[in-house]
Amino acid sequence: MYSTGKSSLLRAMSRAAPEIAPYPFTTLHPLMGVIEYGDGMHIKVADIPGLIAGASQGRGKGIDFLRHIERTKALCYMLDVAGTEGRDPHDDLRVLVEELAAYGDGTLLERDALVVANKVDLIEPERLSDLLASIQETADSLGIQRWSPVAGVSAGVSGEGLPGLSKDIRSIIEQFEQFEEKAY
Image (cartoon, rainbow, N blue to C red; front, side, top):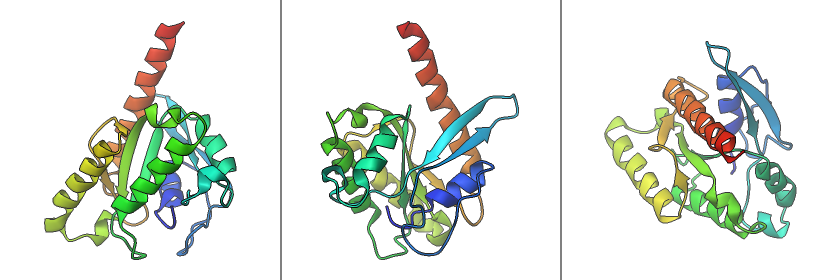
């Protein structure tokens, strides 16, 4: 949603070079990147343009974006935890969940997911822990199949939290692939 830093995250974690600008909806089409690990493993990641309220009913290009999400193994809910545009990250998370639940048969919400709180560099350190905990509570109350605690990162500035997020991404994908292998 809006300017959460999805493209900044894609750029910071892969060799992709998405357009990054200080205004909402910079990403107009899904973008791909590859996270490469030192042992040769690589994971394809997608930066899907922000979903807005009504996306599942065709508002904007929401249906097109949701079709791309259907092809993913796991989800990553990206939030602007600092509310730099006057938005509440809890409300933004609710909108994302509502749109995923309303799309198709609603099974997108059954996917394992990471919740990423971006722009932690803009939050006073004494507030950050409580804010991340409240976002985690919201995610749990919305039924997100959260894989790990909410990850606090600074994708576009300091890189804070990115190594841990990279490990979480790898873990969630490895678990998916192990489950997929057992299914055959």
